[in-house]
Image (cartoon, rainbow, N blue to C red; front, side, top):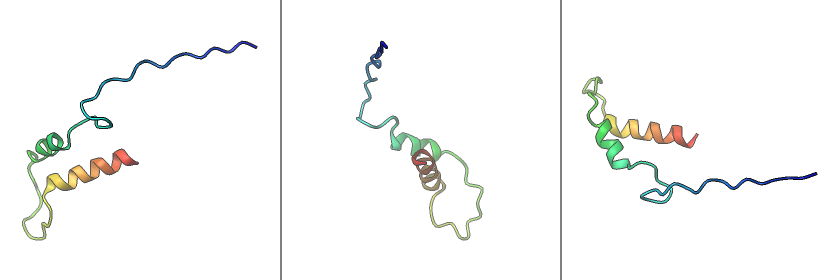
Length: 60
């Protein structure tokens, strides 16, 4: 039986190995979202919470 192996395409060059996007640019984008929470009880900025949620989803 004949088998053939295909070569995978060459990897795409990224600016930083293993990094697809900059966390600083993600944070600055999310910092523009208006926070609808009441002032009482806020411990962390909304942008920090959203960045952590996105990173958690990416990690599975």
